[in-house]
Length: 140
Picture 1 (tube, rainbow, N blue to C red):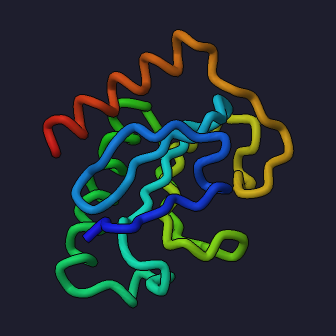
Picture 2 (tube, helix red, strand yellow):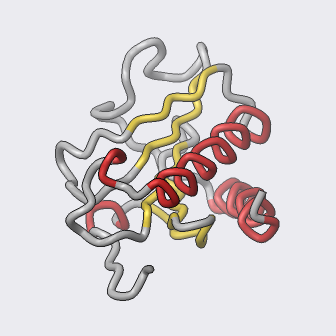
């Protein structure tokens, strides 16, 4: 299924590849203002929309979205979990899962083009990666 899969350079840039969950690569964006994941289904490049997925692929991707939305709410204490598959700037199918809180710097606005970038401190980056690895290693 992932034979020949290439992660778009723009998605990889500024993110850490944590591993695979189901058919998705799981990326942690290095943006400390908001806990932010990208799920990138490992499908052929011509599949650019969720509705292009087969039933089995759609089910697998939906399961990963559910798992990481739950993770975002509980592990990252998000008040609101934003989920979007926009793809205007990068055509490769990918899903954003962003944890929001009423105290975050962009609240209640959108994060997609928020200009201020702040990378994680190394200790926090490692902590979040470990939390994500528990989900990936347990596939649940």
